[in-house]
Length: 77
Picture 1 (cartoon, rainbow, N blue to C red):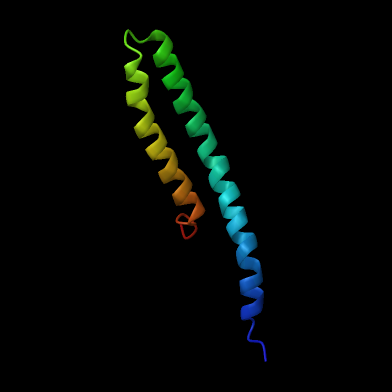
Picture 2 (picture 1 turned 135 degrees about the vertical axis):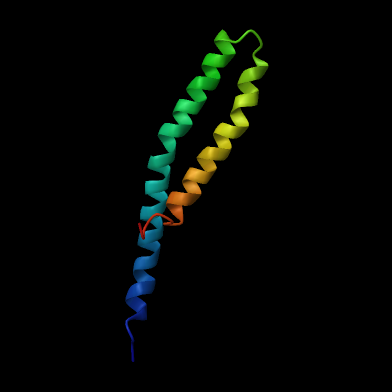
């Protein structure tokens, strides 16, 4: 006898895929903007080392953005 749990389990991979897709689409603009700023720093800054110092916070924030959207943290708001 099925209690409806099969339906919830079958839609779970689809929901996970949708969450991952939404997370990637939300993260890409931040990543692109951050990499553009780092590239501009390589060209304009007196010392190109500044661009490499900008990369860790940019990547960290992109990972946090991805995890937030993928985990559906904002779903209940």
